[in-house]
Length: 403
Image (cartoon, rainbow, N blue to C red; front, side, top):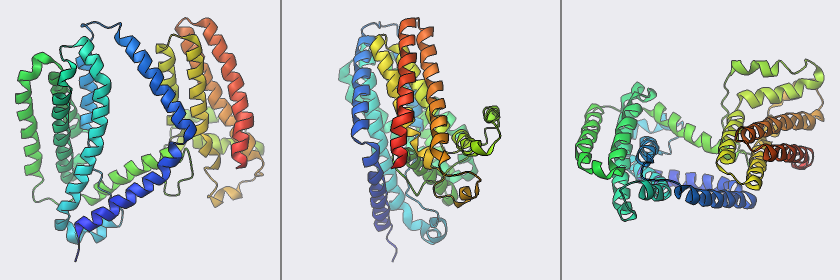
């Protein structure tokens, strides 16, 4: 006899086992040290920045937008797999407990994120708003209730099939959540929370009513679960090989002009292949852009010269370290063996591309320093970045590639 609770325990246990296997590689020793440094530095400057603010700062609006987004993003981690759309359809009615447990676990995980964000933003709200630290727990309780509402609305909306592929429902919830959060963080707006809460309940009631007599949209649920897990696998693939990863490719035709600069020759075949892979496959380009933007913002807000240089070098290291899997991107693809180039040029081609990426990132960091008026620090960062890039590419990456 089918037991949905037993199936959920097996699926959840296997998922935790798979994730813990890769998390030990992600949170290795040196990355933990880097994260501790970043957290400590951010906490120090955050505290110093709070001292410069007054009651006119729009903290309520900033927090409303942030929490509006976090509340709206409320997936249900269902642990479904591709064969389930065939083998579990006959027992769909017996899966209520299975999905209820999934919703509870999803709520607990997302509640932890809300707790951390509220702990970060609460000093800002207490400094510039009319809400003190004594309201932390009541605000947290209300936010958790709003998160439960969002998870329920997200789940019921998934029964409507094609509507889940459109952003309309989530856009509506984002504006409702943002308005609700603003009233919550604004002391004068608490009286209006009840009408907004009533609107939220009516909104949920509509989806509950519309989803009746409708079956699960198995392909949509499985595709969403695979997308979330593939995002985690891409992150883990930056630290170790992940056989389960499913690569995504984007054409990005607008970047073809960069590839046109590579001379057409047999010696450059490997460089062309890696460059196109960097621009189109996986998340290599997005990773570089995100780390560059975060590094620029950190350099912009930190005013201490040596700390700016150190931060620039830190983000160069993070970018280079997390691009290392690109060198082994095609190690299991037998078609690459047909390419007319010797394997010995792989190292030189990858190092050439890696040096180019880190060089461009260094240039952006230097430009950010020049724009902020720190010309001497900018020149020092340019020299330090060039030396670091050469050492990283010439020595560190070569040693990693040999392994």
